[in-house]
Image (cartoon, rainbow, N blue to C red; front, top):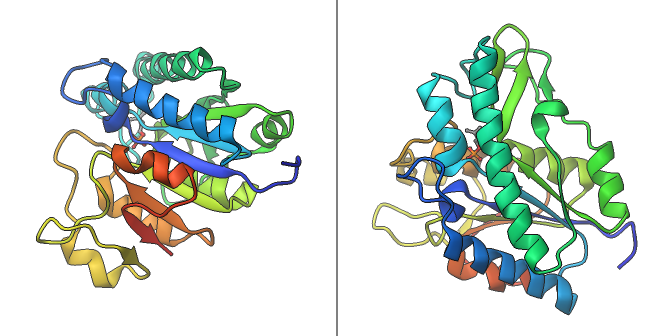
Length: 255
Ligand code: IP8
């Protein structure tokens, strides 16, 4: 591995690592299994440079929906911003602790302190990557998370982990992107995993909204965002994480 190797960007879905129906509850066995797979992949050299992003699950989404905040509707209530960000920082600490227990050199990167939507909710996300890139070059595993984000005209809205994955993949020149979700891939009408997706229209009908509280759009938004990438992406369930980190393509490959 050299400092210039393209990183792998991995998202751990919030519903994978938390109990989504119980506010602020980590799914400890699921987080431990994910941390084991990450530590093994780094130890064996199957993965060189790695950036991890995690979603909100029962931490961020619970508070965001209580305060009526989403990716398109913001808040000017500092207490609401603190609730959403504070919950995400708590979950981030749990993820870091699980990784540290396995000697993964994980460090937190908090999007609320870095990112903005200077053009409002219709504008692009501005996510400066200098700190993440430098941390990677120094051998760390940066761990970002869905968060609040300063948004012109709206106060603070939600930035989803999926949006961060896209920005990181493009800005850092990732060679592979993995999204570990609760489902084993993107499912068609019959509930079967669609092996490959290369355009949105062909799968639009099969994609429904996520069935539990999710202020940032569920699988449809995920597929749209991943299709926009140059790097190949895979969506898979927790059982596919190890295979993905070893270089395989479990679940659905999105090109
Ligand atoms: O779970 C949203 O991140 P996601 C995080 O990746 C918050 O959509 C703050 C609700």
